[in-house]
Image (cartoon, rainbow, N blue to C red; front, side, top):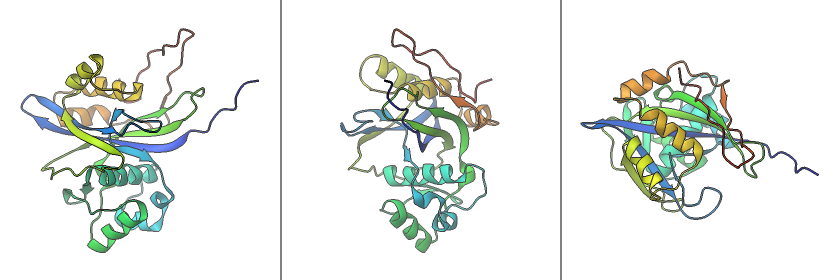
Length: 230
């Protein structure tokens, strides 16, 4: 008897990138060695929460995108995990706090995060046979004048700004443990010379297009293209 398919939990993540003299770098974080994502190096992000679709979220993250609650979740998770708030006035330091407490403090402080600062790159759904599944939107954002990063010491152990190609080399050498979606997006980022090039490449991505890897009999996954690809 086959096990029932686990419902995919909605989630969102942010690839925050910046320009350097040698090309673009992306912000990555390493999770503590516990739970489903234990020890993995990933982009900041997490699952949607009820507050992301609340009136409080609307006060802090104004907008009317069709994927608005995913954008709220992406911005909230970025603020919680790294202390960075993508606001209508640029990148700023986020107050301490999580979930509703964080958004309430932001509203009281007059901080309004910018949903339009995010560009959708892809929507990725964990394969049906997986015991834990996510339906994740991957967003791209440009960091300008980034303040100091303050990582969440409970969930994370470190952060790094790294060139996509360098991150892939470290993964291949066993220095960074990653899931397939992270690897696929790093390969996609590696093709862009500048942050603006990456954003331009992502324009027009359709959230209805889903990247869902399929497992082969030998345990490998079939190659797929991200919805943002040509």
